[in-house]
Image 1 (cartoon, rainbow, N blue to C red):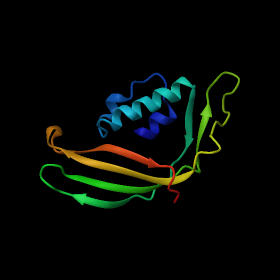
Image 2: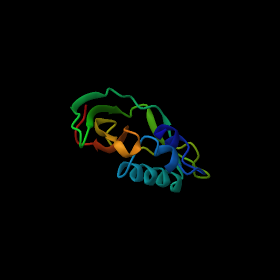
Image 3: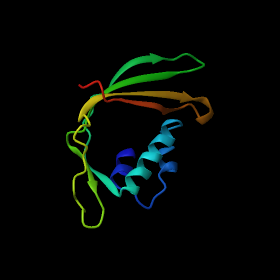
Image 4: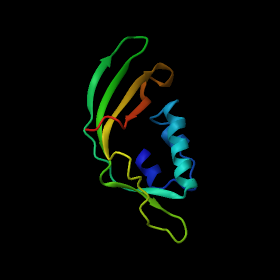
Length: 129
């Protein structure tokens, strides 16, 4: 769902769909990111590469969570302009790493029928992989 929103951030309120698997603070951060893409105006083209690994599991009754570490590969993903006269221009920032560590925490919520939801995502741009 997140990838679909990056590819088409316009004219749609993504909060409800993203709320199927994200909770705050991550839900609001994602929604703001897509609003920013639309304001440029721009969208993402291409695909992420992933190599996720579960790095910690805690099934404690009060706070069950799983931590995942991923090597996020953005070498085949590009920010593309939708501005009139610039349509299709690649806007990738030359100093942004293209491969870096990415950490996520997925938490089980009793109040949501015990569904597992992504609560925290931490891109670690300073940790290449």
